[in-house]
Amino acid sequence: MSDRPKHVPVGKLPELGVVPETMSAYVIRPERFGEPKKSFVREDDVPVWDIGPDEVLVQVMAAGVNYNGIWAGLGKPVNVLKGHGLDYHIAGSDASGVVWKVGELVRNWKVGDEVVLHCNHLLEPGVSDLQTIWGYETPDGSFAQFCRVQGQQLLPKPKHLSWEEAASYGLTYFTAHRMLVDRARVEPGNDVLIWGGAGGLGVFATQLVAVMGGRAISVVSSEEKAQLAKDLGAFATINRKDFHNIAYKPGMTPEEEKAWFAEVKNFGKKIWDILGEKKGVEIVFEHVGQQTFPTSVFLAEKYGKVVICGATTGYDLNFDVRHLWMRQKQIIGSHFADADSARRANRLVQQGKIRPVMTRFFTWDEIPTAHQLMYENKIHGTVSCLVGAPVPGLKNYEETVRAINAGAGR
Image (cartoon, rainbow, N blue to C red):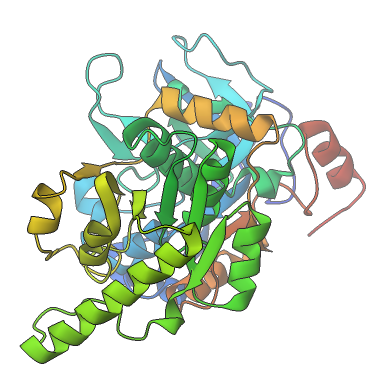
């Protein structure tokens, strides 16, 4: 007979290193595909993951909210359950927590270590750099009491951050760091145009450019967001709502395209005014895709770079290639980050040079609500949810145990 507890309620913790048989989790199943309020359903009898020799089981204290959880619940653009082969899926690609069990080949981590997780899950660790995104293309994500990760996914939790702050930054920040530092190789003195400068990626891109000695021009959509970008170190901001015709639309008539290009040139003149000289930017930080990409290629300076990690407004990109070859510009693709890049990025957070920008946090019971609000475009920036931590503001395991013993939270 097993001496493992059957189940420990959310808001309580088993003895350090003791693994219950089942856990509570927000579970996506194919018969519930749809909006988050339908697809994210709490189940309290989910088997706790077994781990392999190179894997780690983490007690989740807080989990970050990203749009890939919404995609998983919708079952589109792809059905991720078909990809990983299980009949259920636990989303969540960001987390902070405590190491609860380690595989026999894991050398650098031990039970009790306080960690944050990066979501680069390697298909063949040590053999290939082929990756999947943990918590999206794998079923064992962070919206559960316990999550399963490879040992190489662990990073030290910054001691000065609360659990919810530490869970909020990984996917977006490590992506931005990879784009700017490793791929575009931003240098001191570079001028960098950042689309969505107050969004989940942009708040980190803005900070990184400043830390690296460059000047960030952050494109925003309100005065409130402009102030946030300036507080994070932006050299200047541009309100895209001042340029009503800046979004590229496929299938425009010749007259519409002429009006659009005139607006693009007006946008470029705004950059000239900001910089005080007739030049473009050395780097464009691109993730919007169809609506902005032709503008990005045009606005980059001669020999400049457009670095792109996604395309939220569409993947079918149309641009005048003459602006690329005649001025010898580069288009650079970037996809999340590897373990070394994530480690280097995390060091900047540990040192206090980069800070997470949480716009809101949610409780365990509000996890479906958090995703629904993101789906409805009613929240922005970085968002996280409490899981094992009973209340916000707790920064380590000892504080958390004391709070639970004192009856905090649920």
